[in-house]
Length: 392
Image 1: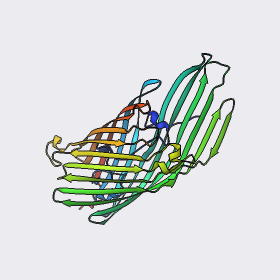
Image 2: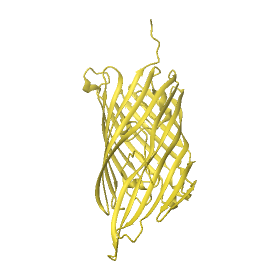
Image 3: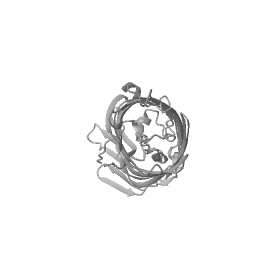
């Protein structure tokens, strides 16, 4: 089997299900623990919350692009290994359509990633020596288009439509040192071509120097359109192709934020993905081994003076933490991520260079599998005044 992909993960945890799921928040919000549902900022594109697009200035075109590098150290029964990888994270664009009432956003995002390579050697009565190998790679990516409109001065609604595509491949091989025993390879490939939707709402109001935002998002459970390939190789290839029963979960989330004088922001998110009720290869999620995925995120952002003459006064400082359940029932331990970041505003244009460092810990005594990773992300959030009439 041959697969080709730019993996965004090297974690052995991505061996299961749809792999590592992405939260799809911009770099600045990632430094705040991955909050987003209650965030509303005219200098950030927030595809996790489609109702947020109308926060943009009615004269401003915005673009956000980011890339990341990841270093992981994981331990299992066969020992400890280190792995490094990197990739383009996302590309998003936001455009006002009608004053401050209607805005849209489009972009390219990752949905999930698979990337692991594990092998273990053993023998049978010292007569046969064999190696078990487990290998997987691939991504599901998505392009989206979103529309947001303000119902009134304190309520915004929005929706995203996503087209998803990509391949997730998993292979396991049993090879023997003895030449009289054939190598056996089994592989499965999930090839995705599907559509999903997300709806969002935000309530917002400002009292003097105090701004409050509350937001919610919802996605209905949907069938995942796909092809499923099963391959077994020993003396010859046997290939089966069928439309396996796969589903995307119902997702809902709520979040809120408080901002004081455009200097200090405190934010939180809660998200639930109902994985236990979906089908995976025509098997109910709770039977297959899925459980509902809960994520809690908390973040803070501070800048001393947004209009200060000194550059250090306008720099943006961020920190956050998130705690989430793994959606595989066999993995009892939670994933814990701590993050910090700095935003570097440029002098002459409305552009901010955002940097984020995240440290995450997964696994523990329940599985014997531990994954510690350090991810560095850098992004450019570009805002330019394009939509105004010049006076002659």
